[in-house]
Length: 463
Image (cartoon, rainbow, N blue to C red; front, side, top):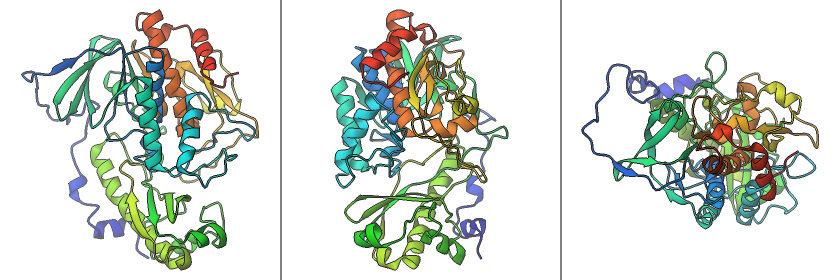
């Protein structure tokens, strides 16, 4: 049996090309830096709120801030909005209900309901694991952000952060086809997933467990020309929770060293099945060399899954082909920016409610590491998400939203997925505007009672 390492070495994907000098948090090598002091940088200071990162959290933040009346800019490194649900090709929404009712409401519910039109085969009553048509979801985000009045800037990546004082960010330096541009705002929202803006501004953070090991990543992919009849009606469930899933037979054969038992799939359209499958262990998503290798290996994994499915389920996949792999790596774990409060697994277990909570969450503890067991709530149970998890310590005018909010490693396994990211995004966008109007741009000093009142008025579910 060929091991994964042996296979990758033969494929040329484990080479010295991936051995490089270590990188510090500012992006320069530890040996030296190149001074850019003579470079002229244009300045754009039109904005009240700037959101960095156009995933679910960033889109919700931009819509929310613009809706509150702020001049809002959303900066995104890719050419589309939606993050993991679009560029990342995650095939289904995590559960939107606690088993009895939808609990991710407000903008989250609006986006979820709008996305359903792209998957008309799904039952209207279905609230959990609803399939995602990524191309359709892109247009949902495009339209909702545009209609809010927020502006979007694609193909633009934050390269540095400038502060005027120890706790105040003055500008972010963005690189795109215009060169380097300094964008200024009164309040910034970090929805980068990796917490780049906050970390580069000096915020403290945790990453992974006590040893620094992060959850496994995945590169999602889709097959076309699948036999829909056999997939939906006659074939056994492919999901790894099914002990008779054909993926186990493929693994036992030893012919496919890159695949493993992480295998989830959703039917997203006629003859097209999309997969969240395979693991890429301990990828540091803040290291571009590591993510480069992960993308290459991820494409090899997708190819092996296709070969394996043709082998063990030929009636369903015999004529299928790999139509697309994601443009964005499915990162489950990266920096968690330390906030005024760190949500813990004990908070999760106790189903805690907070005076400053800005939404609820019921997703299970889903940590992708060997030996970790899932922990789930009973029907109707959930916990509150404190606003203080969105306010980085030591930064006056920066909020976090989405995957980089303040949690411990285990609780992070519950709060990292798209529905709660939409909830924290909406709250962050609203709070940014309240900080401008109420507290001289200080996000730590807003009236959280008023924030909760406004969130309820916009439909959010709070206790």
